[in-house]
Image (cartoon, rainbow, N blue to C red):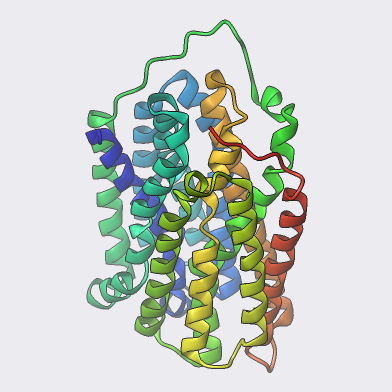
Length: 390
């Protein structure tokens, strides 16, 4: 494993952290800057939508400039700068602006590693390598749970964010000095995003990519915190422990899904089977919304485990992308995957606001049902996709 890929993995640890840490800070941000769950859903949605919008220029930059400069510069300016701004927040709008900057900073890190996998390794290994990077990088998801709750108790949330700004800057500098750009593809073929969108095989894959990652990412990244606080009255440390379990399940799911396409000889049916079961787990969570705290944590973990199909869907779509458009191809897929989370965070924030009332569980039944329905629609469209194996 190249040193550059190791540092990129550290950058992805930060990316996973920043998409998930708000769940643990729910009570602290409400107390100190008056941020409501709707405010945090808006800030989280901005992170995901900014991240998604950046995939188009990042894809161009990977193909034209290379992963080293693309990832290092954006992570330094956006990741470190955004975390520093967040540490000085005094109102919800400051947190939202900081999340926009952090979204810009995190946007190239995973795709830089995927670009190197696609250019430097055999195509048949792409899904496994993508899942490995995703799984190891998801340690950030774990750090954003109980360890963050402890750090907030020891240093305060402002001190914790200031420390993360310094770590982000150090990782960005490490990427600049260790990552090696692959050799450019010598091809007379020209291509653009429009050429990718002309590929019919992608149109049955992109809708599922839009909704498959959203339930686990949105719940782990935000809604697990308010849900466990409002329904079961858990405190910050207890919420940190619960989200730690869910984050571990998401990592385990990533490692389980990674090699399944080669073991079973199919990508389509691995992806479809996992997401259909995900619809079922969300439905059960709606039915058993307040049955007991450990039942809820277990169901949240099942949702996280089953929702880890992201790298296999990425590999499925990657198989239909020509080599000279790899950068723009993987970032287009990532745009849908991450953009879907942002859209659904905005929608879920409105659902929470509308359904809030005397019954503390009602908003979360509505949110989880919304996730289940959209995921089911994505599965129906995906049935018509063409399988791909390298």
